Amino acid sequence: MTLVTTDGYEAAGELLRALAAPLRIGIVTELATGPRCVHELVETLGAPQPLVSQHLRVLRGAGIVRGLRRGREIAYSLTDEHVAHIVADAVSHSREAR
Image 1 (cartoon, rainbow, N blue to C red):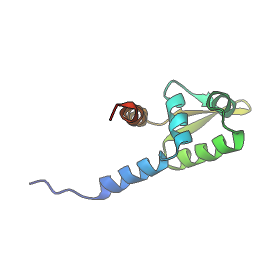
Image 2 (image 1 turned 180 degrees about the vertical axis):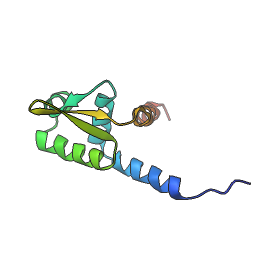
Image 3 (image 1 turned 90 degrees about the vertical axis):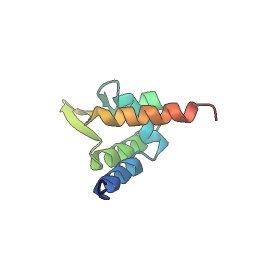
Image 4 (image 1 turned 120 degrees about the vertical axis):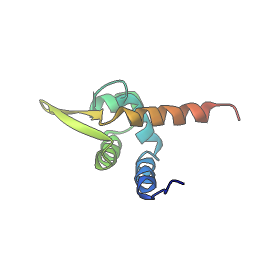
C-alpha cells in the first residue's frame, strides 16, 4: 500500500488556482508558442494592458511564467512546458461534446 501525502495535492491546488481565470488560460496558451511581451498579449487577447499585467503578476507569483528584459520591454515565457499541456488538455476537454 502506498502512503499518499497531501503536499503534492496542495501544490497542484495552488497551480490550478493560479490558472483559474480565463485570461490566465489565454496567456498560458499564447506563451506556449513562445515568449511574448505585454503589448503582444494585449493585442492577441484583446484585454486591457493593466489587466494583462495583473494576471501576469499572478502567474509570476505562482512560478508559472518568468520575465526576461529585452531593452525596454519584458518578454514573458513559461517556466515549464507541463503547464502548457495541462491548459491545452483542459481546453480540449471543455470543447468535447457532453
